[in-house]
Structure formats: C-alpha cells, structure tokens
Length: 433
Figure 1 (tube, rainbow, N blue to C red):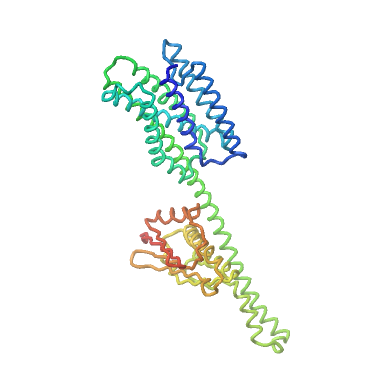
Figure 2: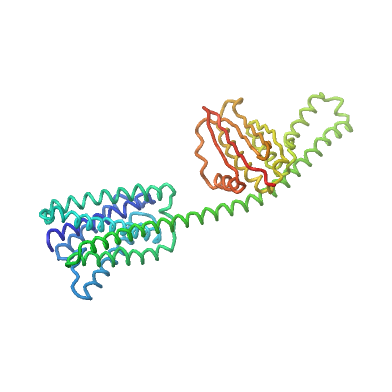
C-alpha cells in the first residue's frame, strides 16, 4: 500500500471512530467506562495496524467484479463490528447502536466525499503538491474539522437537546440499507471513477451527489428519531389525559362526599352538644372552633363551574394542609365552552407547579397563591401569581406540555414571567362560540 493510501485508511478509521463517538457521547455508560473504552480502542487500533501491515486498505483497489463485491462486504463488516463494539462501553440497545454507527458512518463518508472533492478542485491550481504527505494530512484535518463542526452545530446539538439519541426505533434497519447503498456502494463507485480519464466536471458532480446523499441520510435519521419522539410524547400525553379524566371523576365524587359529610358532622356536633346539655357547660367559642376545624375540609369556593370548583377544592385542601394560602376570584361560567376534563387538566397542572414553588418558602406571608379567572370581551384570561425561592426546576415535563397542548388547541397562548421572587402565569383563550 502506498504512503497516501495508508494515510487515507488511517484517516478514515479515525474519522469513523470520532463520528460514532460524536453521536454516542451522551449515552448511558457501562462501568468502568474508561477501561472498556480503552480496550475497544486498543482492539480497533491493533486490527487496523495489522490490516495496514498486511496490505489491506479501507480503500481497496477495485479490479474485477469480485473485488468490488469484496470491498462492499469489507465496509459492511466494519459497520457491523462498530455496532457490536459500541455496546461494550455504552449501555444501549442494538437499535440505538445502529443509529449511532450508521449516522457515524454517514458522517465519515460525508467527510470523505468532501475530502475527495476538495482534493480534485485544488489539484487544478496546485497539482504539484498533491502527492505530498503534508498536503494530504492538511486536507484531511481541514475537511474533518469543517464537516464534523457543521454536523455538531446543525444536527448533534438538536439530538442532544431533545434527548433523541437513546430513542429506539427499528426503522434504523432501513437506514442501514441506505448507508450501505449511498455511503458505501456509491462512495466506492465515485472513488473508483476518479482514477479514470473522465471529464472532471462529471466527476465533481458525482462527488457533490455523494455528499448530498450523505447529508440526506443524516437528515432522514434525524427525522426518524424526531417523529418517534413525537409519537412517544403524544402517547404519553394521551395516557395522561385519560388518567386526568379518571382523576377528575374521582376528585369530584370525593369532594362532594367530603362536603356532605362535613356538613353532617358540623350539625351533629351542635345537635349532640345541645341534646346532652354539654353546650351549657362548654365555652361557646370552643364549639365554634371545633365547627371551624371541620369546615376547613368543606369546599367554600363556588365559581359557578363544577370542574373548576372541584380542582380548586382539591388543591385548596392540599394548600391548607401545607400552610399555603390559596385565594381565588373566578368567573366560572366563562369557561363553559370547555369540557370539564380540560379545565381540570389546565388548572390542576398550573396549581401543582405553583404549590411546588411555594412549598419550600419559610416566610408565612409569602406562602400564598392567587388565581384570577375572568372574561374580557371575547377572551378568557387566567392569571396565576405566586412566590418562589428560586429553587424550582423548569417545568418542561409531560404535564407542562399537556397544558400547553390543551391551551393551543383552543387557539390560546401561555406566557410566564418572573419578577425577583414572584412568578406569574397568564393564560389567554378566545371564547368559543
């Protein structure tokens, strides 16, 4: 193998390892991760070195029909080995490993295609230095930095931000086929044509097509994971809505039972005290205190909307038990265009977030939550205000997404704001006619 061939082979292997790592670096790791990674890299380096010394190349010479098939099988074998080796240091399923390795292979092939195109373009202006080792290494490093940097900025950051890499999807088998077709077979064809005396414009067009195919492969893999991510979120939201519907029915029945029972207990206290003559001996204030303690568990918020009354009564009990003041001024009838489960979900999620923020506060005066619901023209507004000690986490879970999804379904909007230790949540929705 020539010196340039050795450089190309080593560069391609290094690119493949770095590309796979770029996609897999945020995955859960097996321990000891450093030792397992070192063992895998040492094994890859040993095999690559042995292959180079024995005259093998990651760019085998195509001579006859069998050599082309052997070259394809060689690339596929490297891809399969990468899938298995990745599962040693990382605790992932085969589907996740398939994504990381196929995406890494596509990125490596993209860098190789850009490398080939850059070399051919530069050869027209600086052909006398193309055979030098320094020039080859400079092009390899420059192309790798540019292609990997752009891939990280455009694709990998989105994958990591949305936690898509670890999502399992069996459609990755189709992407493996695409990688074999576009990033292996087509790559071999374009590279082999480069040694023939064909018009350079034709060759460069093929190089561009190869680069576009690699970009298309990466984009399709992202779309597969993103669509799968959305399917999982929709499924989770649907399941949560079902649970909220069941919870609403349970809460409504429970609150009604509590109110009825508290009403009976309060009257029984006075009746028994009067019939037994105890009331004459007891301090009237003592009986009043007992009645008031019982009344705490009686729903005192009446907004004119059964669903809103239910969620306010339920969260009011929670606030009372935790020493939090919940005040509410609500025009319940203004929400009559919404089904009870949506009202329960919207205000339940919002009040849960507010209670979580207020709970750690030690100052009694700041352990308060205020809710105002009113109708302004043809719009319904809900303003929730509460304090926070700044320790709460951003609300970006399924509950918050469900809330935003419901409000968006009515053509409404949600706005949050913060002023020192105060937090505000404003919901605006048009009144459905």
